[in-house]
Amino acid sequence: MSTAPIICFGQQPCGFFPRRFLVAKIQTARRLQAELGGEIVFFYHDSDHDPRETQTILRHRTTREPATLNFAFANKVQRKFSPLYCKRVPADWPEKTLLQLPNYVERAAIDAFRKVSSATVADFCLEMYRAMGLLEGVRVARSGDVAFRQSADEIADFFVDVPYQGELVRARFSDGQLRLHEGGDQYLMLPAITFTKDQISPTRDSRLRWMQSVLHCTHYIAGAGEKAYLHSGEAPEITFVTRDAIDDAHEAWTQFPL
Image (cartoon, rainbow, N blue to C red; front, side):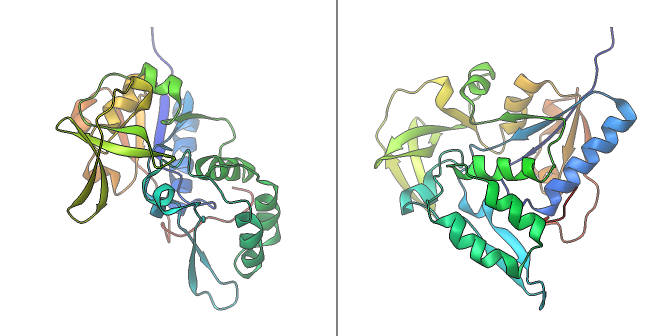
């Protein structure tokens, strides 16, 4: 019996207006679905903790000069170490950002932004992408979801979400120790604790097989950067497809509709 295709692409939250490479992945997935049928799944890696992932690069509507906007964060620990699914959006950040947006985007984008009210960075981005019509008919699977984590296979290379200074942080587990990367070759060692599967998320190198153990995709759309580190040999059942080309891939997509 043949199985309907499961067409997957993965991405961290990548700006409150998504970067154009994410839109290219979505467009590639829709093209494949039109050819093959099946389901599109967005593996939303909201367990990542890097605050640079949500930088949003916009161009001034008059001068065309680029500007980089990002979320504000409650404190230094949260900004550096908390996973994106629990980095909190400060109450005054949306209004402050709304004051800047007319310089960069059209009315439709501003109106959509104004309606988003999510409390965390990952939720805010996801709600924004939905408001833009990007995820119509797309199933979203989140790496921060406890049910997803509990369903995934065991991996040897991983991070653990643990409490630290009143925040939840994403610590690398290595050689039996939990540690936070402070930059360069500097690490902060955390006390050893007992942890469970629902606290675990993958590293870059273990992400593919961890994801695939739950999603069982038949096709995976890879970005230019992903191709350099994906261990495709670990998943011979997947057909890997390079995302379609798009100009200014790292800048924000602000067009309505898709």
